[in-house]
Length: 221
Image (tube, rainbow, N blue to C red):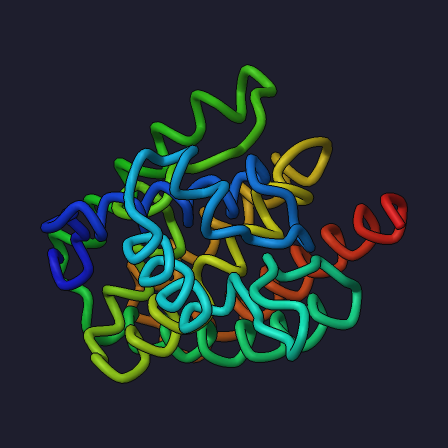
């Protein structure tokens, strides 16, 4: 399961990963203009390295360019959320269906171990915040689909923008325990190799998640 195990190879990779993390977590505010000069000072790299990072961030939908304005971090909006989650619901539903068919028993066992570690956090009422990558429940299931095109569409295409909405708006409050219970039910369906149920539960889970984030976004706006 190392298909998307990202390791920075170059200084440019390192800067790209750091800037992406800062955008996802709100350290660099949504909607803010990206100045190559300021960022090159902040990250202590050349403007060429920053330019490359911004281009890569644009391809994973975290940055948008507008004529006469330049590059900006995407703004989190109710309309953007709805469009993003319509795609996410469909693609991750398919991923869950394929995971029920294609994950090995060992991979499903590892998924259960991951859920048990999450349970300790949920029990203490901590924010249900998961680090990007291998420990993230959704990431494991996407990789478990074993479909390279689907993995690329989700991980390269929309994954970090989804995380941006989730991290900044969606992972605290009463939703924590219900989200965890939904995760448990999805894993049970995958464990039972019930493809149809796994897809249905994942789609419903993402719909509930969208409704939760949408309420918070409306409250902010």
